[in-house]
Image (cartoon, rainbow, N blue to C red; front, side, top):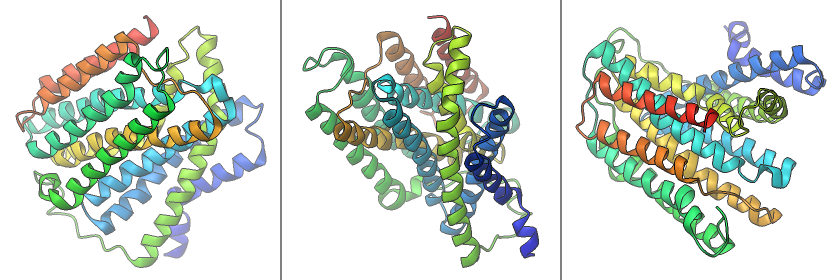
Length: 360
């Protein structure tokens, strides 16, 4: 049994990734960079696997919170490490990555969940109060972090002054903390799964022992660590490929966000297929909140310590696209029921986001 556990790919993959990273073969070799990219993606999947084991032990909605915060830790670590390495050249990286993550979550993950869930189950139910709580919190955080900096007058350009950056960071933390309180304590009943898992009656309850729980906790940290290091190492290669094809540099943020959100997207879509759309929504909207509400304050601390300038404000086109996405999600989730049309419209919004980035 122990040998079988040691041979699990969720353990082997991150170990191989660490060995490749410390071997130094990844530098200057296209072959090993491709291998590292594959190991990076599977290390992210390993992190999700161990997050799910931890989530199974702690129960809902704590499971979705753990996964959302784990993904955000990866995002924050990559952004901060790149900012410290590249300095002024990475001034817009936090904004681009957070904006891309928000658009991918609201349009891509939510859209696919609504589309796939509706195609399989025709119509799915979820808790409207949970969506309202999440969207009210999300809209406020989005405006404070990505919209206001474009229109403030203290500093020219899409920047916040130091006091404004501190205020926006505190506002994000307060709002996110209140959301977590509502999700875990005050209004927890709104976030519990609505619908029946098709495999629920067939599946045996999974007992998570203390040893397995703490092993998964340790392996989660190991997976997150190598994901951060590999993403940081491969980002210059990704950037050179993008610029080599005369594509906008902002696509780097989209690719980083897509890699980070891959496990979460798979988990959300799987839940929607099992008629557990509430879990999908908890994952999606909770991740969007964590992505902005925790990333911006973390980046703000680094900017204040290292005296970096950080570009936060979006241009008018991006603000309109973001507003369209938020408005569409609000309308799509306003009735407590889903259909195919909502999913298709959200996915069209996602394609418009990518297309207008390449052809502005």
